[in-house]
Amino acid sequence: MHDARVLVVDDSAAMRALFSDILEQAKNVRVVGTATNAADARDQIEALRPNVITLDVEMPGMSGIEFLEEIMETNPLPVVMLSSLTQAGTETSLKAFELGAVECFPKPLKATPEQFSKSVGKLGKIVLAAANSNVKDRKHVREHKVSEVAFEWNGRIAAFSASMGGIDALTTILSGFPANCPPTVVCLQTEPMLAETFITHLGKLLKCNVKAAADGAPLVQGTIHIAADPERHVVVEPGQPPKIRLMAREPVDGARPSANLLFGSIARGQVPAAGAILTGMGADGAKGLKLLKDTGCDTLVQDRKTALVSEAPEAAIALDAASREVPLSDLAAMLGCCAIG
Image (cartoon, rainbow, N blue to C red; front, side, top):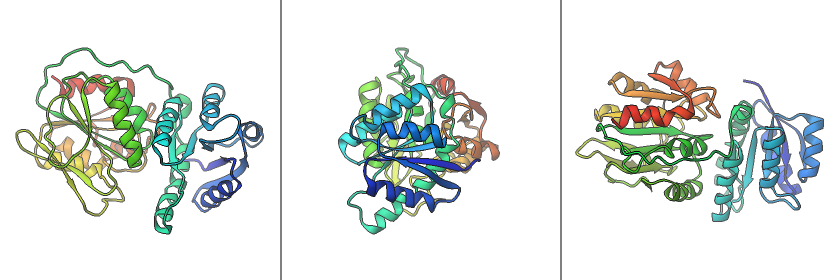
């Protein structure tokens, strides 16, 4: 893993100073320069050769989204977008992911000191992961084709975990799911408001149902449940049909919701399943996926070449938790073989 050399792009002098100070305190992260707008940033990119950029969404002249599109078309670099957590902001964030942003980070506006400290503590890790991501190998602005084929379900549920890069990967995979898809539960590490907008977006894109995970919801064919509540874990309770349970308890290995708990609950309940770890930071999910594998379930990881951030798949591979390492383009079809007859 190499160090992050960051260019901070923001028209606000206060925000440039704030984020520069935060990043300079992070391990293996160095701010090499700042820029006030797109034109300034072009010059700084050429002169300073950063390996990651933080980019404000709202800038005078060329907007952050327009400049992001230019970067991805001319000289792909890892970009972390900075945006306000509003409805319009989350919709813009989804557009940024579609264009190729590595992550969208909420500006800590009107936050309590505790919330501010918790929020900004993540930024250094995100920027370092972005600097080591596979941006140059990733294809952007995909055409999402919804499956028209009906499948005979074999009784297994599908379970995913994803964090950094997960919205893009999940959109690609779930677009391949038919209307009668297997019961599916997703543990997604992202901002709650962004998850809400993402669920609404998928609901318009897919033919199957997409819902925020709710306590007691039955896992039935044709429905995808996405768990992204940072205050509650998601587990699967065995039964006919199995049910989702949401639990308020401390984070597990720093994660809440915890993919380890999700996969582990499926394994302990002996619920027939296929599990997959997608792109993401950290090692959450690896231990749980190993439990799934040891019970005879099919376990997959997104391959390290197509994973935007390969830390989570690598952790699962290191524990021998994965039956197969699969490219993103093949994951939907592979899960079809594992969980849809």
